[in-house]
Length: 252
Image 1: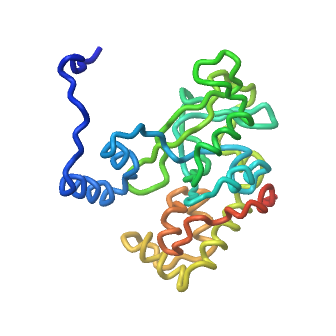
Image 2: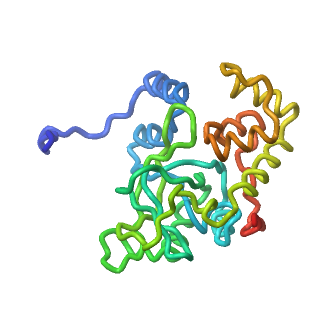
């Protein structure tokens, strides 16, 4: 149960002052929180996240990724979402009630409305509450690293498939995790001068690690999972690594 404002007490929308909005925006940015919800609320607009979290065939390097690329990507980052993955051998399904967290890609789309029209068909989503849905679309908080989480659309399945993915990672299940991480590192390394020196300073300056090299970065990405693509992007300034639509299905 909760308390809500009585209808007769509700007032019309009141725009925030420029100073108040600026202070709020600066606070959001300081803690790494997306500001699109804040800015939409300031204009009395309905808030819908312009992002999609993919954990299967729509990820970078997978067969359906060109669908994502064709609608424009302004940011692509590896990410985590609470829940577990199961599979029928051909595709994975995310159960938000499952234990642990699942790995995937976070995409900030330039045309989220157009993208969702296509992905709804791919995922067999016929509408909110429809009994004919193969997957249902919902919003979840996604962790890309840093202090804040980001809201993103995701397709989930409440009925699990037969086979569990023990590490909740579709790329690992396909045997592509190492190859993808190597390609991802190469893309970021090529975008920044003195990449490893700056990455060492940004990531390891408070640890006992003296120097990061290719082998150590791959280990941190895959095994220890303590280094995020977001940290690499802060150094390389490449926020759209491996988003060329021709890359679909190339990491074997």
